[in-house]
Each structure stands twice: as C-alpha cells, then as structure tokens.
Length: 97
Image 1 (spheres, one colour):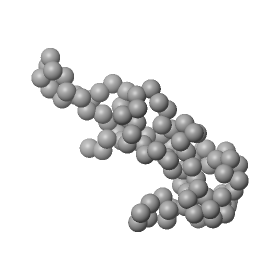
Image 2: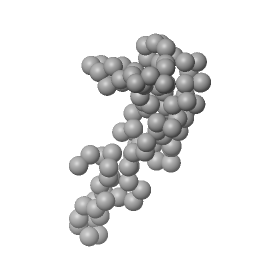
Image 3: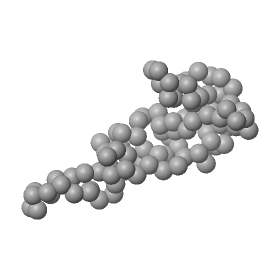
Image 4: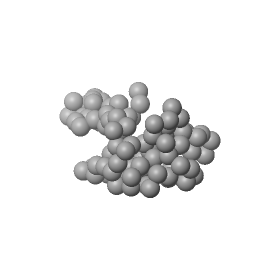
C-alpha cells in the first residue's frame, strides 16, 4: 500500500503493526493554481513556459520538496503554499521530472 495513503507503525506492546495516527493522506491542491500563477508571474517553475490556466493543457501543482518527506518533517505543512509550484506535466511527471 502506498505511503501516501497510510502510515504504518509498530506497536511494541501489542507486538503488531498498525496504522499510525495522523496518516499522510494527500490533499487536492488544484485550488491553489490561480494564486501560484500570480506568484510565479505566469511562468512554469522549471521550464519557464507561459501558463494558460484556461487551456486544456493545464499545469500540475507540484511539491518542491517531495510529499514523501512529510513523515520526516512532523509538524511541517508540506502542502503549504511555500512548498508548491506550478509545473507542466512533462517537467513534473516526465523522465527526469
């Protein structure tokens, strides 16, 4: 099972693995697109191509520091705007993305 859905911990007293409190379920971040677009002056973060939020070829909201680090940074809002950027799908998901 993906770490993005549940955190697993070992309970020494019970001698069993269990779902940890405060799982790492990911949130939808698409609502931040317009705010990030203004902050990034209409440019994608990695390749600097122009952003057109009305186009069908939209951009991804990406975590600059990967979401997988959330478990290593307790108490840090990894989904905060400080860690979000707009990226084209090719830069975000493609080879080397």
